[in-house]
Image (cartoon, rainbow, N blue to C red; front, side, top):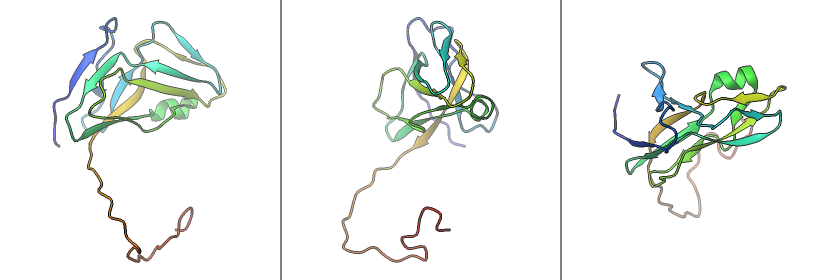
Length: 147
């Protein structure tokens, strides 16, 4: 498995927030913690922008995808909007999480709570080649339940 070095900065006042970390030896995603100043209550149907307390500097040619945690989704109905969120290699601001409560009960976000996960991926750039026709496949234009 390839390893890359990524520079990370804790935003002032968040020295107590843990850095993103892999929870098992083969985890693809690193858990990201909430850096709220006080407990944030998200009522059913509400969404809230939650700070992570960190900023990163990815190497050129990489992105970070911000994804929901499955345990929060199944147990509380809590997930992330704009999922997966993309952190581009040239972004230097604080990572924020757009959390929504699809559950039936208020959800309390506490400081240091593992709230999302981040997966670092290589990216490539597409160069479009406009064509009058596309080569045929067995599937063709079938979609939305075609298979």
